[in-house]
Length: 333
Image (cartoon, rainbow, N blue to C red; front, side):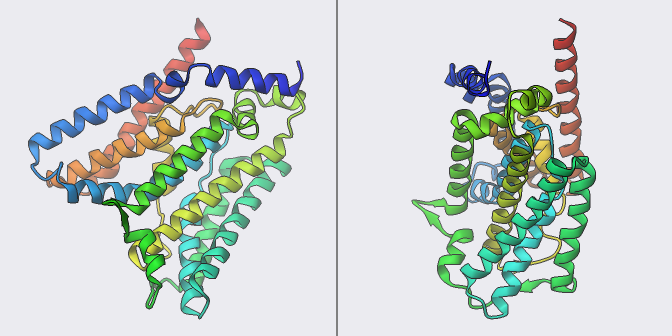
């Protein structure tokens, strides 16, 4: 069977039941859990379901959501990217620093995205072409990108002044009462979800994640696909960095810290397998939403902020355990 037949078969399997793809068991379960947790929080805190709280929570999860989308694609391919948080910080710092140096804000943002894509290209080259382990490669890039961000700022925050209103609108504006960046997250989710289900290049991501050796024998250029995956994660991380800059008006070298781990947690909670070949963009975004709801609830209930990280990664441990046991059960049946 040639590559096109394999990909078409895979595409039919993934799109034959749209409801199942978009609202599979894990996604449906997450929606139910989110509704139950939200209902409980609304009982214990009268502030949870207020417009201001829901809006603030939605705005706060956008950057993590965008990064989690890219991380999901990487995990589906059988890889992961630990440098996305640092790339987010680097893009934010580069854009802010160049703007203060006299560059037009859009030129500065373009250069920042190019800087992020360069990091992604390097990751893709060493993982896809040289064959290095993605953990070591992206761990190194995590330190390099964060180090460059510190070099740019000398460790100090970069505060923007005189930024055009149209740029501020990205982070603080709203359309029909809905914050623009939430609409942006929805748009990115829909586009990437559609591409993962319908586009042939993105179906190759599933194929190499499921069985890389079979993908090579089928004629898929695995190196090219892996480089594309890391370029995508870097692009989305750079966009998240620019969104953070537009939202806060400040660029700091610590922007995006721990974002990579939160993204992996959200993706796995959403049903993405750490073994590759399985994953849902919609599920990953639901994972981000669940973590945001829980963390927001802890704040409203006056629980120490230090418990947020504990709860986040406890949920990750449970999700990884479920994923591991489900795959082990599949192998034994």
